[in-house]
Image (cartoon, one colour):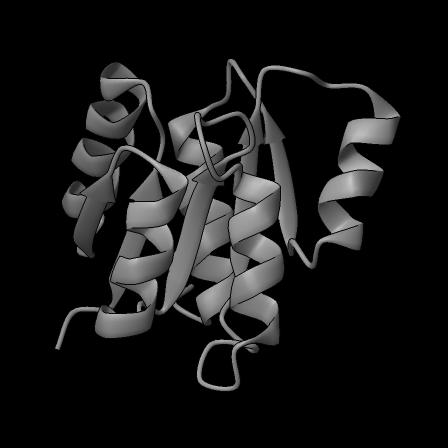
Length: 123
């Protein structure tokens, strides 16, 4: 059974790039465009890992991350955050929300796949 990865980003080209690379690496991908959909999908589908854009309209990636980390069924699910803002304070806010990794846009899809494999023990 393929491991499921949830991607939430309001930019369709980012979702497509990540989806293409993750599917090519052998993962099943669930892609949504906002935080509320990410939270709902995570709660129903129970992905193995979640990738969230920090800046989404409505519920931000930080908000979703906090909610996932306090949900009993998802508290141990790894969360990667993506952001266009690479300040140290942004990364600290991501880690404070419970994120496992933090990537600044533009990012390397290969690096994300490598870190995802390491995190999930798929090396």
